[in-house]
Image (cartoon, rainbow, N blue to C red):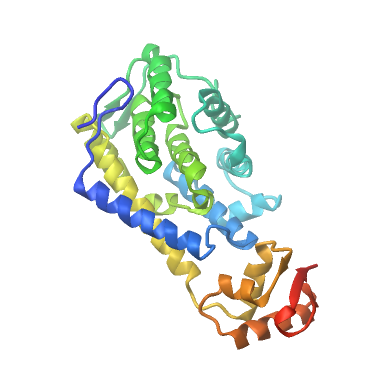
Length: 322
């Protein structure tokens, strides 16, 4: 078991090691196939799924269609609170790179934006005691509010200075933050958001990986993992749970992107990569399973559609995006 002033307590189990290996291999596969740079359409779909799932866990009733409408600045009829939650989340997820995962001020700024108009005060740690009640039972009694500032300070020090890998650090932060429960409201969505930011710093694909969807599909397992870690006094069970969620999410990303692409799909995806100048070989490096004849047909079609211009002949042909 790892215990120190810097490191919150957890144990590296064989399951954790197995999941880290699996995730690392899948991240390599994603990067090798350039799937960490989805098309604008896919980015939008992933963002909608992330916002919908993260807020659904907190009881938001808006559908993916309604969230899409709000993202497109269209009017939506729904509970005022739910609409405001979505609008705040859209603002956060459209500006993810403004937030620094190891910076406590950035953390408070994100909470202010995420909870603006929903609670008072927002962007500040709680000044009263809180507990999580399920039915007639107190499920979790958070540490006294007087302890929150130094507990969060220690947690950010762990993020900055621990040499643990990001996959584990992100899970530890998520669990410990939920345990500390630093805010009167918004702790769950902040925990999931901050885990995404921690992972994004090392692996950009997490900007577009809606792992919250799997959590929202079976929320009881999420709460059970939190409760088991509370009971054991370590974040081990929660780390195992979250790594499994991440592993399955990346598998789904690979399965989705490895579907059979047609000519139009390939051209749309390639154009979204913004390669200003390229050859047929560059095109085939992206789509490794197509023949040179198929690549030539694709590029001929792309030229006819006005997606790019063609210069030169035969093996000296180059293409430039318009």
